[in-house]
Length: 224
Image 1 (cartoon, helix red, strand yellow):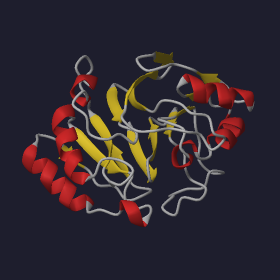
Image 2 (cartoon, one colour):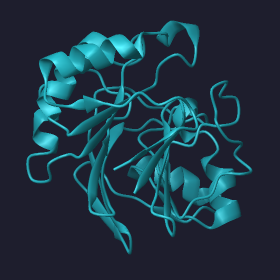
Image 3 (cartoon, helix red, strand yellow):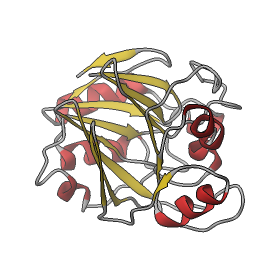
Image 4 (cartoon, helix red, strand yellow):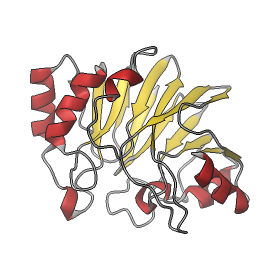
């Protein structure tokens, strides 16, 4: 299974036949590796409703027919726009032919561009015999260690930019709590307030934990 970083917090998980797209903020993203018109999707997953995460969800979902998994309040809003949705809440799991996704807690805020208030989440994804954990825009909190208790995490997609999320120093502690085999940093260097040193994060995590950090430029992939 290939994990392709599309910029900011957007990732594409693909095994060749199925493409799972996470937080497709592409239009207006200065670091986007692909346009919203060119990206494919079998399923779209959202961590929360901020514009830099919900992004191009509606246009991509309508073009591809991909169902969108989002917390119930966001799902309701998207459903009103004619999008096929699945509407779990925290702790809920949605199953597909390709695997499943579970919504887990994240400490952040969330309001959609239309003003719908909702609760942010992290995404625990089982796809192609791999467990991928997208942390969303969380701050550091101790319950991160519970996420992989039943399903140990193979790859953690982790925000490190600070200001709006945890910074790279807090993210080292997050990596230690989660204990993933591999960590891919995201949500950094897109805009000036979240500029940080991903290579320093890699060095700190690999010194403090058993996790391997893979730093991807937008458009690059990691095979899990």
